[in-house]
Image (cartoon, helix red, strand yellow):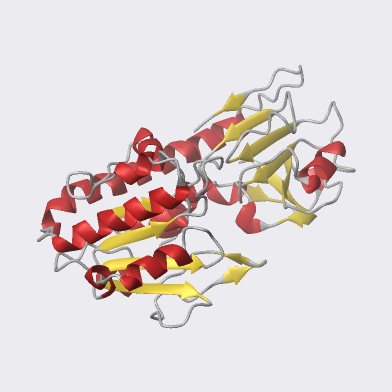
Length: 328
């Protein structure tokens, strides 16, 4: 079994990739095969490490201009062995280093709900249309404006169960759980999915120049067998389909997904939801697609888990200057 020493200062469990696999944690660097580093500290985090490093950066996409990443990697010696696990490429920040790209939010959802079983996952509610909008933080351009538009329209407001942090008038659907100032998304009360049957999702990224970035908002709905409409970056649904998921375009007009302009994309999204609630939808017809999405989530996550294991155990870390990038 792989022996890992968690850095005593620069390790945050919920950002680490090693928590998804079976390893033996040891108490000193001398005993380990790898030193695990997982943090966003603006410090020389690799300084003094002698053993090969497993570095996890799973919270968000890495950006070349992020000062703390520059500080961290300046402390990495040229001959130091490292495997970087991330949700986006580190080529501009750490050229020539082995970089395994994974969908952390998909894997985290699988790990919490199907392995550790932290929360119940439910079957769809097949009754009259009941929209679920767990808005999260209100500081995104596609959240409060979307909520306002839905509440202004009598077609949707009577079918809407919603919550948004810092906004009065919603229901206590999604009590915020935070750690290190970050919303975890778990645990949740399964009643929010049992009492509704269609998830309205406003993802973290919205602007045209931002990356495809599905989070727990999307994967929780999928795990709980909810059909969904997702307001995010252009072509988000297309890229979700590229991962093997199916969407609900026979019932919902998904043309909003190809709209580049953010204001028009939001309005087209609202129009699609208005049309949805006007239809006499038999939600039983979504059951097969929803089950297919659950199976895809499990399949993708298990494949990702295997790539993590192989990436570590094979120990094929390149120090030749040619980057090894393994995309999900």
